[in-house]
Image (cartoon, rainbow, N blue to C red):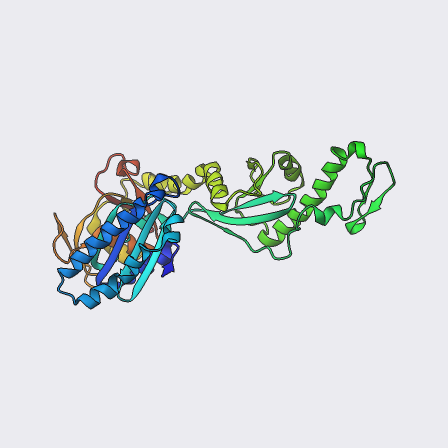
Length: 388
């Protein structure tokens, strides 16, 4: 079983899979609560698995072939740890040559499909060009750097670049009850204090020295590239670190609290809430660009024209209505398009087709719930801005 990350490359790989028995199962799942205790997610998946098995039996396949194809799916039902560690949605893909699982940070539709290719529409949201960002978790016992985007978070290997904690600094401080003189530390650093000001002036000096080491590590790891960095720390660390910081894209507003025992997924959720406006900026910029060119030859809502343009690499940005679909056939060699009012045998989703062609040619695809957000005067289920 491959536990995949749904990103552009993965979605295109899924779309490349072709077989008469391509199984796609999607369910919303639960992180905790009675739904987990009552195994509701397993029951939903079991119902879809049974539906797929019945559909396979109608294809006159040998029972051994059906059992072999269904075995990885049905084995999941007995995997209790798997169901206790879900996210918001689950997608499972299976054909005789392929088996992959995606745990989604967003709820997914509740559906199952047996076709000659995998259904990828529910995953197209994850192909959008969302920005990455970093979270710097700072505590007295150490530093953790995370790289994240709206859908995932992972710890960065900082090697020996970051200090192990305040102990890397306090070894150079000689704390006594009364004024004793100066203690020389790293780089000739000298410190003088008494017990009375240990909790204020010298505590600030101690933290400042600690934060300088962290800042040096951040610059070594990240340089000065234009990627947002959020500081996650207790509140009184924040202004001191902001004063020491030399990374130009540290956000003024950070995450405050003691994060020593907070799970990365919870840090991720809080960071996403703080950066929600950043995530919307690129999408809104693209909508604005489309509207600025409205009425010119650089925009179109004609699906036939868009399919041809996608093959030629002309589409810069494609907007697709999430719940809509158009069925028919498209021949990339002849550019011939056939549209049907209702789905017929062997039809393909032409909206999925134009989206995948756009992604392959380096264009951007955005899923929208309401196309009037993109084109207030238009109608239909798809629209695009051309490169030329």
